[in-house]
Amino acid sequence: MDPEKLLKGKKILIVDDESDVLDQLIELLDMCRIDTAASFEEGKKLLESETYDIAVLDIMGVDGFELLSIANKNNIPALMLTAHSLSEESLKRSAEDGASYYAPKDEMNNIALFVADVLEAKEKNKSPWAMWADRLGSFYDKRFHGTSWREDEKEFWEKKIKSLPMV
Image 1 (tube, rainbow, N blue to C red):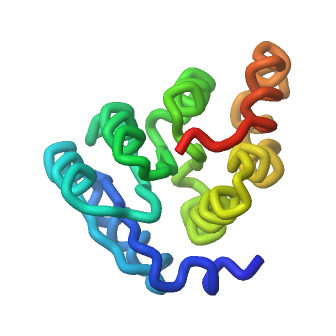
Image 2: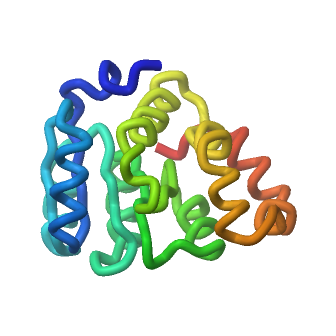
């Protein structure tokens, strides 16, 4: 898969309350058409009035889980991108609430790859969580000090990875 080719011309909404994060994401996704929002209110307005191929949502500072709900209602796949809410609980909640991906800001330089994973999975009618597990599973094993986060919720994660996309 060539992420740049897959992403060329795609319309993306990025919602984050940190202007430096928005600037970096705009640069990393420069092959896309991008709208940005720095607040919940701006993000909500855009999600309800525009059509996007995908939304990249911060969790903290912009009420990302509420924005995820709005994205789902509008059939917009959402990638959760977080630094401060990087926990087993937020990961599982993102998956349960219909996010297509959950990525750490520590890995933001790979955002084009993550967005491409979601769009490719949607095109192929597959779960983006399978690609997520391959790409970021070991990151979370290190972050969460082992594999117990997977083992404790083994049935949930196996079902999520094999399921069809929510959106």
